[in-house]
Length: 153
Length: 380
Ligand code: SF4
Ligand code: SF4
Image (cartoon, each protein chain N blue to C red):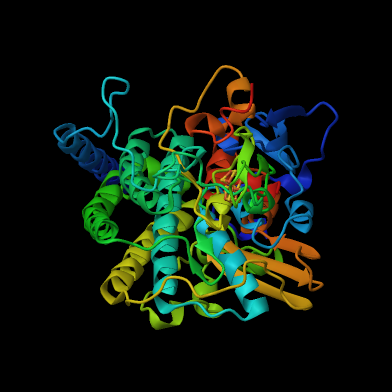
């Protein structure tokens, strides 16, 4: 009885010392924490921020043809699109492209469903705020030129 | 049954529930329950007389939601059930629909699926490892686990675009192809884990306090395992060799060479060892997929609007927590007629009341931790 008790103490102590050894070894390795905001971590290539409209290279207008595929694909009903044909154009252009980011799950179904690859994910990661307003109705048309710009006023 | 246990048990049979028992609410906001789970404990001093889990705080009617979504729109919801192993859930859903519609899946896609799911399994077990030891009062292992998990999440994020709630698999394939950088990253991770796992064992498995707190605590006898519908490491900790990946193989698992770790003692320590050994086996699988990654397409052609033919199907996969089975009925339309999820945590929780009876409160928390519950999966 007495010997096994002493043995338990010895094995117990040695197991604690082994643990301590690991801890001391780790003390001399490099840390993993990124000191944000003084440092920023590198965003991965496929990072998904909120969705944004892709502009046509030559005209600067949104590539979107307001077909509504993305609206139907979205599981959370986040997207609202309205479109009209600008004068002289063959295809429609969006007059309204609104995203409710508060409901978006960043699943990517809209991006994949678009027939003309008119939406991608932005690389905007600072997507936090004190109120939901800036995110509940994001006007994605802000970032692209509009073919209707002249007529509106 | 409890008499045969080696652990000291309170004589439950002789104790009646008294009106003036001390009632303790464990949760719904308790770090030890890892989510909004509430357990009503009737206590006699430090001993638990009865433990009744109360569910439903996070119930979202996932099954009903699925009836109102198209077959592809259900996919993102999969990650909201078990947020720690979203890819296993992804896999169950896409395999189910592929089974119903008889879609082909290219070999490369299958390999990418298995590779990422196993990475996901490791990240889930690492988080469990950290959280379980936090429950036991050890903080350092948690940081070690999270350091490795961080590498893993960065890796998966570079491929899938999200860190936790992945929506990556697609009907007939996967959402993105792996590039050389990802494969290299995965290889480096495997190497890193091979040096880190022995260190976990050094730090924790041999530790005397840890062993005392887990050995012979919360013993599940083999007799109880099937009756309670247990699965995953909880089942394998009690000596039953059942893993959906080998018992009901799917994807490319039959071609891979890996073992199913089993422990006999059925206590918290056994479940811990099963999970750590599973990390080792997952590393083995990852090495094999990396070595044999075939070239080719990552997605076969599937129609844009999915309409499975009338009929029903079910699909079972092994998630890090156990067996997930999804059953779906199609009436030939764009939306599922009925979807049913059989989730592992729900069944694994069911034995908790039995295990907790007569135990010390601190041991009950160790038991709860060793079951590796994910509450949104229970309240789905
Ligand atoms: S990413 Fe998903 S949830 Fe978000 S807008 Fe697109 S389809 Fe909807
Ligand atoms: S699917 Fe593409 S083209 Fe159609 S409305 Fe959406 S963004 Fe525009």
